Amino acid sequence: MRKQSNYSAAPIGVFDSGVGGISVLKHIRELMPHENLIYVADSKHAPYGNQTPEFIQDRSFKIAEFLLKHGVKALVVACNTATAAAVAGLRERYPDLPIIGMEPALKPAVAATKTGVVGVLATSGTLKSAQFAALLENYGQGVQVVTQACIGLVECVEKGELINPSTESLLKQYVQPLLDANADTVVLGCTHYPFVRPLIERLVGADVVLIDTGAAVAKYLKHRLDENQLLCVSNQAGMVSFWSNSEIISTEDIISALWGFNVSVARLKG
Image (tube, rainbow, N blue to C red; front, side, top):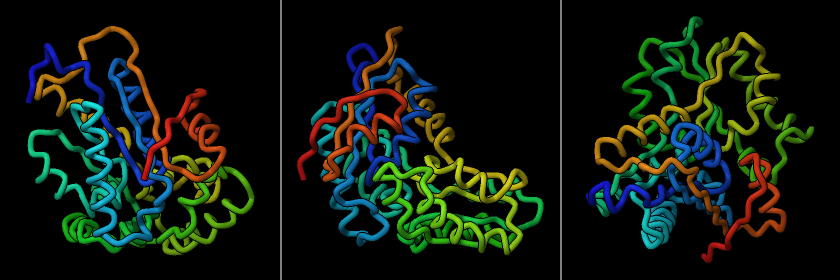
């Protein structure tokens, strides 16, 4: 790994199947405001949960190559499904690059539950993955884990439909089985889902704890950068750039709304 003196100002690359990973990007920005960030939304191919592992791996490799051409010093795979399908291959291909993945926060959820029932909201791709099966094996013993594939929810977020009646109706049918099973802790197992957290909170009530991993991923990223002497030493606010291959005309408005500031979005080919 190159030394801090000539490499610390290099950007951190973050990507997701669409705009959901912006929820992780916000945690990274909050924790490390001086870092330069590049975010890639592969929205044309979202949700990855509907794609084959081979397709997801191919997309992940192509996006990683794109980000490396932009000189990134670390890569965050801000997608549970892409992590399950591609992070091992990415680490094998780029052994010198710090690569941080995502996984549903089952371990802290098991520690938090009082009823002994944990709910997991995720894409079908994540729930079917070997990675999730391993999480269940390692951390799901002694509790009941109720899983729910949230078909169509990623698409709602991609279109910026965060608080409308159709999104609420969709969520209602997904959270009700978890409530019926007496789940008191629910894992948001997709980076898109924190953007509809207010709706989920309204539906599950104040007694149910919602858990996502964005803050933990940001902390671990900072640790990896620090141990590799890659933390930015500038005192200036870092630059943030956005790329997307979305076919939705209002993509720039949607990303600006999710990020919280007006931004320009460059066109990603492919």
